[in-house]
Amino acid sequence: AIVKKGPPMASSIAHITSNQKFHYPSTLNVATFVSIKLSQTNFLLWKTQVLCLIESQYLQGFISGGITSPDQFIITGSKQQINLDYPQRKKSDRLLRGWIRGTLSEDVLGLVVGLETAQQ
Image 1 (tube, rainbow, N blue to C red):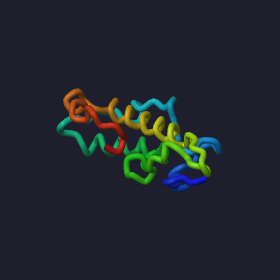
Image 2 (image 1 turned 90 degrees about the vertical axis):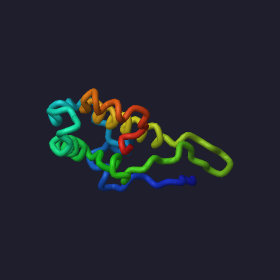
Image 3 (image 1 turned 180 degrees about the horizontal axis):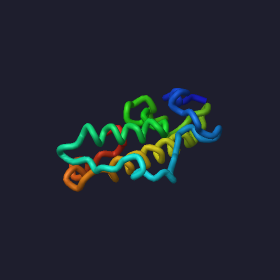
Image 4 (image 1 turned 30 degrees about the vertical axis):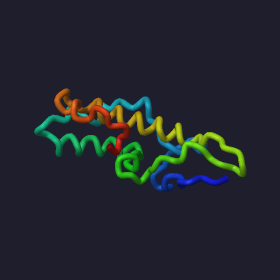
């Protein structure tokens, strides 16, 4: 099988079940970690709280670029099939993006309209 991009680094995927390469902590209460909404004046406080959350869930590679998006398809000989890592990674990125957006004030939220990934 030919896969154009490799899997995420092993250190980025600790505590993940063997059938799941991308961490997906969907039941986590973000408000437990992030008690303030990002505004025009509190970036450093907000960043400290958000990074603690992201790092505690082994998701920092999504914002640093260390966990890249795998190709959507795998080519085996003349056969093309869906790469199951692709939707898993996309799902985890969307969760993280939602966490970040949920911690933004209304003023700041307007600045991220149209951004498609957590890294952006």
